[in-house]
Amino acid sequence: MVLLLRAAIDGEISSSDGVQVVCGYAQLLRKNIEHAGSAYQDRLVNGPLEDETSSSEKVDDETRGQGPDTDKVDPHWELKKVLARPEEDFYELLGLQKLRWRATEDDIRKAFRKISLKYHPDKVGDVGESGREAAEEYYKRILKAYELLSDKKKRAAYDSVDEVDDSIPTESEVNAGGFYEKLSRAFDTNARWSENRMPRLGDDETAYEEVDRFYDAWFRFKSWREFTLNQEYDPDQADCREERRWMERQNAKVAKGAKQAENARIRKLVELAYRNDPRLKKRREEEKRIKEQAKEEKKKRYEEAQRAIQLEQEQAQKRKEEEEAKLREKALIEKKERDKQKRVLRKTKQRVREAAQPTTVDSIELTAMLEEICNELQQMELNTFAEGLESTEEQDLEKAIRSEKARILRRASEDQARRAAERANGLSKNKKMDDVPWTEEEKSMLSKALAKFPGGTRDRWERVAEFVQTKNAAQCLAKVNSSKTARAQSVAAKTQKPDEGKRVSGGARKDVAVLSDGPPNSFNFSKKQQAALEAAMKQCPPSLGDARWTKVAEKVSQKTADQCEGRYKELVTFFKQKKEAQQKGQQK
Image 1 (cartoon, helix red, strand yellow):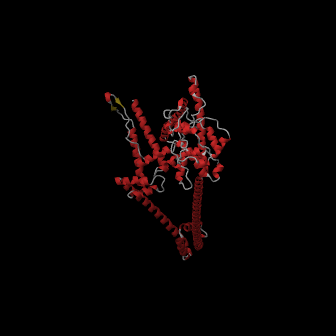
Image 2 (tube, helix red, strand yellow; image 1 turned 60 degrees about the vertical axis):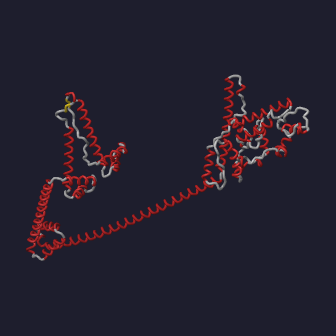
Image 3 (tube, one colour; image 1 turned 180 degrees about the horizontal axis):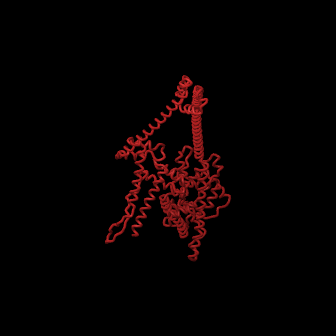
């Protein structure tokens, strides 16, 4: 009888086939019963009956996407997912229980059209009043399923609580050798909730760039999964607006907590994979090895550099010791030579004293005169004098001593006169040269020489004169001093209060102090040096104390600390005088 009713509904038989329906029949409906009993447990463990599976549609995972491997699902999970399923399985009502969340909008639309042609109340035929009511009730359920699955937002809420194995493998299971197998399944399962297309986990041959892209995408995972389908409170059942808002707040709080738990679950899965990924472990070990190798190479280079420095220092110390030894040896030889000359000189003096002894023995004057002669004469002259005394008769010794003393005095007098004449000639020559005016070329050469040889340079003015070539050191110094004096006088004259003021508009007269267009430059600072001085003064504050101008001079080329400080004071004095002159002019 049941088979006849099912065949009649499906349109496989009619009254023309000789079969007469003598009573009303209704569509066979699935009852909502509580799942329990040993038969139900056996069905979960052993699978559905053969006739149930043969009527189901075959789904190709390769064309519909990849999902969890149902052949390896734990039977206890089957029990868990059935108990967690809503009262009605909307996918099963439309015949999409195999596709489920992978079903496209076109699949849903085609399935609804197909099942409507079979179970629409207008298509079931003459089944009586009770059969039509049952068919209408069943079609309402189909229509409700189609309306929910056609709405993206409602379908997302439904799919969020649909059956899925969202369990995460433990760390021991992952490290036991099933990293790619277990975690690939977990990532593929959870990829269904992503708002964007997620990359696959890959295998040992996957490039590091793809691995980094995989974890970067999963660490920024955004899930569309929501938990608003089966809420505790139904706002439509509220009695007033306040109660409705309270229900909405309670539902939002529960949904938010479920969303946070879902995000934490995904984060835990990604961190588990990132922590135990053999590819990342291999790369970390390789990076550590490279880092250690670079560290060892750096240490080796440092040690080699230290050895080179030490060797250079040892060689420099050795050269220094050799030079010092040579200097000591040279000094010792020179000392021996001086001592030898002193001994020879003492012997020669003793010869002179012995040769003159008959005359000087009774005369203190001749003895003193003889000592002065010994001290004035050099070795060769003294030796000649000794030989002369030895060949002189005793009565002529006094005359020879006095004659030699007179000769020494005449020579000293002549030397003094010659030096005086040379000084006089030099002064007259310098005076004549000072009278010669400086040409523009000589002034230019002098300015370049002053910049090239700043203050503090050893033998500065001799080097300046050598650079100028046409003037000596005294003339260059005199020219610089005269230029400073002339500039100082010019500044004083220009800053001096005038006797008469200038006429201003309106016929009134005011006394205005006139200053030069620019500050003085007594220390010959170029524009580049002036800019460097100003920048250095900003970098070196006055809090440095005495060391300030030394640091400033290091940043200004070819200028000493005294010149930089003098230039600063020169500018301060100029602008201070200029300000005072302007204030006096305004007051008058």
